Image (cartoon, rainbow, N blue to C red; front, side, top):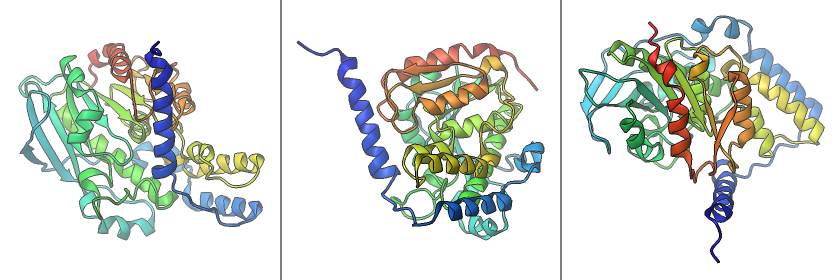
Length: 354
């Protein structure tokens, strides 16, 4: 007698996530032998040097809008019909931390923002979904197969596939090197998120200025975190749907054994790491997207960013988590779940805002 698909698909999806998480994402790193009090002191000093109140009070100063200027446009190809443009422009990002300025200046490929834009009819733009990829992604041809682009396009949406800093065609270094961001220290990571938001804001405004009646963001994993952060910064964003999202760097470290000590010590460190990364947290500022346009979608057996991450974002959004049967990598059921979430966000898309 054959087992129902759910009886074997869910354990398979969970197992693939665990294998990828433990062998690729979390390469064995032995924590330095440091007393808890010394580690706590170092984190408190890092917070003092990194986090300032104005970063939360002055959103526009911390995440300034840098418009797309003189973009390069090339014809491209896609698996869906329509006009395809490969858009590239200079990322007008400036690091806020002094030590990052020379480092970012050396990353030449990262300095050119890029996106693939797919329109059914350039003379009559439709509501546009901004697709934001996950960690180690960013190649548009790959993302067209990870996101349900055919179904989204057929449902009435034009598409814009963004490339995050340090990923895809913006990655400096060898082809098989891991992306430098988000990593390389908290201050580099925070500045990397600032660049990501700067580039995505520029793209949202470009799409709206080119005639898109509305723009929503659909972000996967790291892209879910980034799109949720965008929703707390960009007032011209009409909808946001984080999908199998990361929600907290500190929570990820806690869940994956990257915080040493007893459980009580780990919990204390988690709180401090949360504060350290808080300037770039998607839960640190009010959400600007209308309530009808907020959805959060999670995989029931996700073992990379478990449902706990989606729940954290959903609480901040004031919505319930929506789930599908699959995991983080083997995403059975995602297409129906995403189409349902997007359809129920349509009212937000329909209400065009300036």
